[in-house]
Length: 271
Image (cartoon, rainbow, N blue to C red; front, side, top):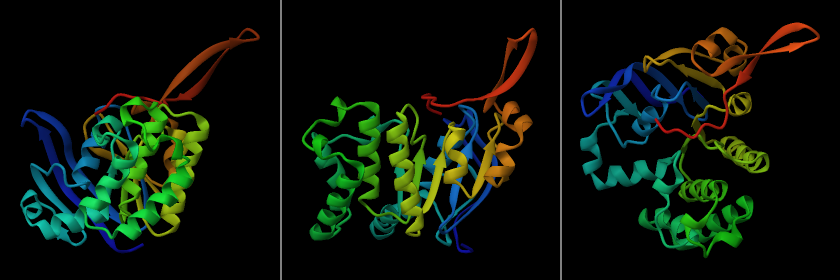
């Protein structure tokens, strides 16, 4: 647990050089940790996940991965690129971005085949994931004909089949029914128990305690304003309300007004 996988120091990033998305972010992620990022839409969570996956790079600051600085130029080295893609897998918030093959089966097999994994090992992983996620009936279907929950399962399978050391997930339970959500949580817990690092961005505070060792809270200022254990973060209603993670709901009962916090869950907007 003490070996750093990712280290960000005073990282800034903006889209098109004009739209700030990360403003002075510092974060350290160690091997085997379960990390959750929470914050309102547009606070920078998805941008950070893409940076950890080597899809975008800081305008300022330092980004390190596996002990070395992570820069766009390093991906020009095919050996480095292949090793990094084997070790780090991202499940996008919008599954349609991730699924592009004619059939579900082809989508799941695409990644490990491109990375040169032995065919026997690919088949073993494939069979296991199809069973665990209960998607055998979907294999010959087009991904774009699936429901949101089915697409999410296939996107997760297409990432897990690579067997990455680090699994990054953007809103993995958004819009899903309770049973599918439970299956995905159990799958992530099993992956973590096997030693994998799990990094999740979510609005669904119901899953935070079960899926995290450390929670990072993003503000609308595109920076991390607090981090701590899930118990510490979830018990601070002022922090959660100030950052649009809960809202106060009032109702009258027996002539008195009662105010209760309500969680913000199942959002679909992308950042």
